[in-house]
Length: 81
Image (cartoon, rainbow, N blue to C red; front, top):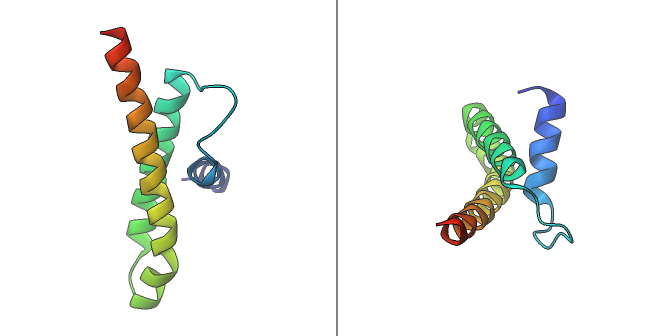
């Protein structure tokens, strides 16, 4: 993942979930893919206990944002169905 994509994924992952405008389904799916890419990259770089302790908070933020996005997508699916 490029540094700019990493920064974007991290920014999205740490952004407050109370945005004024609701993102489109396409934007949510794009963000979810970026989070998955970043999660994979972080896990791949975790080799020592020192590194795990430093990266664990980022993984937690990514996981929390991923759950928020999935919940939003599920709500949209229920409304559409």
